[in-house]
Image (cartoon, rainbow, N blue to C red; front, side):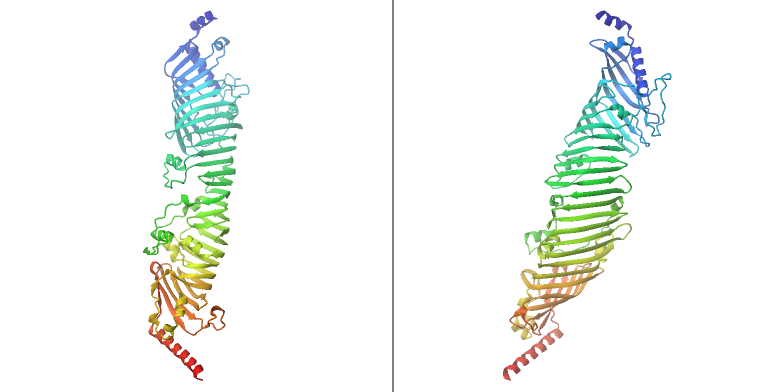
Length: 635
């Protein structure tokens, strides 16, 4: 045997081996393999051929002449293949390759090869790159590369359909391909966008992948950013993919930062995340079933279907469980909100200024959606809702948000919001009905208004249009109505006014101190509070405010001017003459006290309407009452 080896070293020609390798590659792929550098053949401890400056041709009409260039290719050849007359390869070692993978606009790729027919002078079958005609391996054709090692180099992926280019470098891979009909295994590491990813992957049948027939894939990608695992079937490359996908990581913030997306978030937000789903992509539609998402302490389940069209089409049904959005909302810097939360009634309120900045709703035109969302509990800032369900539908820049139901604040409600953004000015239509609502916590949590106590009904039907917050306020129209029972209005004690009988009966209205700010130390209890505001161009007008109190009856008229952030209301308080109070049949003493509530939202004043004419009316009424009582006493 030793003599045969020695003899072989005298008979083997480096050029012959290179020629055989080149012929075998071209027969296998229909592409030329060229060696521009030195060729070295070594015999011990094994037969190996070292080729420098190697080029492998690209597909016709590719963006580059070469699909791959190699600084060095080291080929390990079994000794027995030399004597058998057929060249086999045990191992490839590829040093610093520059590999190009392209997907053409037709959908064909440059790794789909044109194979020789083997029956007519080894002619290579020619196929055009601009056609989707698939190449097929000859029935009895096979390749056994043994082990392929890739050391260093770069992989560039160009997708001409989606017009994207990606680069992966610092390749350190081991590829095991015993046969095109046996599993292909790839392991090692690569670098993408300055991050190193550990890779484990397998393809069950490479021959089917080359022929664009269905094949199975396993992929595990591990990195400091997160882990991706996929196991499934590629039924048609880039067009029909199904399987189970799992993604997890320790920080959403770090992941987005790696993609040059800056996310300002609280320390406890956007950290650990995971996604698990069964996916299927076909006919440009991505279907996700059995979705399970975890983000920090949140957990979602559901299903979704996304169609890659213009505009994008999204259908989804999501159960958010207990959804606490507060960790994901920016910190409030409002002095007014801070004073509400801390109970600091001495903090000076600032004037309310509506924003003139133009709002851009063009994004609504990018998506057609039909989404159903529900949760067992929803926390948004101070708003706390129980079980709730809403649907979101968008089509041609028109959105409909339907709050099917919600439970919260001891009551329930429903409502709709329609946004028409297909042209400017935008239009918004809202309609809500809330029943058995506990007013104080709802209004306090929603808008920081804590002046109303009681339970009851709240409804509104409002429309507006514009392109800014100020526009929407200026063009607000519609109706708002309310009805509350067994509560109180904080800020002024109208019952105390009624008890100031001596001052009232004497007609000395100036002795009644009403010219003051709202104060949480004062309140007016009521058995019922009702009213309706008709809103016209941002100004809410009412003529039917009614408040029933054991000692006084209150009616009110006036305006709430939202554009100018001013209140101008006139309240008439009328004493209940009987000691039976609310149960009295004669509920009027005949003495009415007009009160004005006016001023900007941040500095509302309450004061008596003590015009000369009003004083004379009260004095005359008092005089009549005194005369009546004297007549009864004196007969």
